[in-house]
Structure formats: structure tokens, C-alpha cells
Amino acid sequence: MQTERSESIRSVAADTRGKHRISAELKRLEQETRHLEEELDQLEKMEAASAACKEILSNVETRPDPLLPKTYGPANPSWDQWFEGPQDKSGCRCWIL
Image 1 (tube, rainbow, N blue to C red):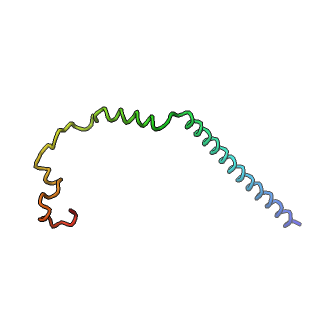
Image 2 (cartoon, one colour):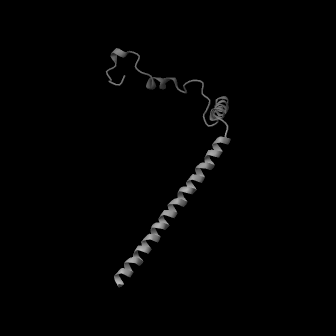
Image 3 (tube, rainbow, N blue to C red):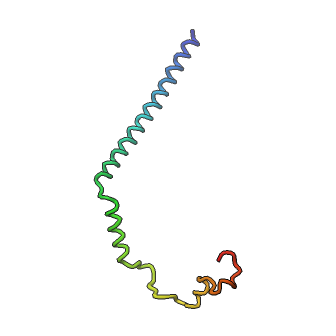
């Protein structure tokens, strides 16, 4: 009789833990649903992304970058030889070019 009683107590305790897990998961899903609905509402109220992108692009293109120096050509013309390929392709023995 004692074992039957302890088993019934265990099953009730396990059942309440299962109910708690289910209710916690349900609350989490409801919270996530609420968050997604709010995000959808915000997206519906926003203007089209392409219009905003065009506006940003026009502002960026018209203003020079203040962190970059203005250069109108190479600072040292002799450096160009390192960034250009060889002038005579037949004399080049490298595999990359």
C-alpha cells in the first residue's frame, strides 16, 4: 500500500513538472508571436527600402570621404611598375599572369 501511494505521488509530481514545462513553452511561443507581430507592424509602417537606399546612395556619392586624402594621380609614379603587369608578356615566366 505504501508503494502504491508513493508511485501516485511521483506521477503527480512528474505531471506538474510536465505541465510547467508545457506552460513555459507556451508562454515563450506567445511572446515570440507577439514580438513577430510587432515587427510586422513596424515593417508595414516603413517606407520602401529602395527609396531609402537611393537617398543614402545619392548622399554618399555627392560627398567626398573626409578620411581619405584627395589624390589626382600616383604619389610616386615609379611605384606603378609593382602594380601593373609586365609590359612584355612573352618574357614573363610566372604562372599567375
